[in-house]
Length: 98
Image (cartoon, rainbow, N blue to C red; front, side):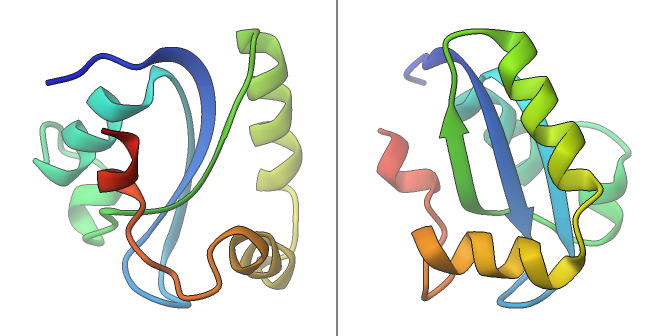
């Protein structure tokens, strides 16, 4: 598995306009793989939230954490608009990371 070590903020979805999950990681490929493989008993496993629909890379973890904290407070509609600006068809972007 290719290693992509850079701080990132990401959003996963169960389907188009479905359940959303936000996260921060230092290795986006590994972390999304862990979600997809249900490596932990978690929200993403319970609600089948496995599609990578949005991500942003950062140079520093604190910036990625701040972005996630801000977006977690957003209204759902704002999150959907953010996703659709980058990914209007809600494609799973996981394969684009390789």
